[in-house]
Image (cartoon, rainbow, N blue to C red; front, side, top):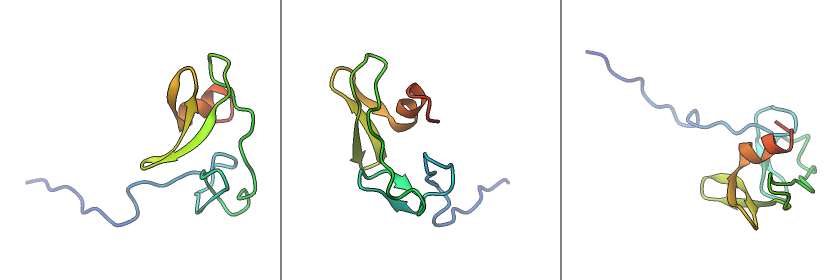
Length: 85
């Protein structure tokens, strides 16, 4: 019989700082999980593939982007569109 490993508290999801790729421990003013060194940095003027500006939103499952024309966009997908990840 093979049993699954026991889940350990705190290891299920680790947030990564989008600025320096370290483990995120705090949130900045926009609600994005960041490390302590990048706490004062913000994302400004990020654009969607359609050309509209993206708004940073925070929800139950983490941060995401909202485009007025396209709707909600995954956080990592929005960073990839702007060449930041």
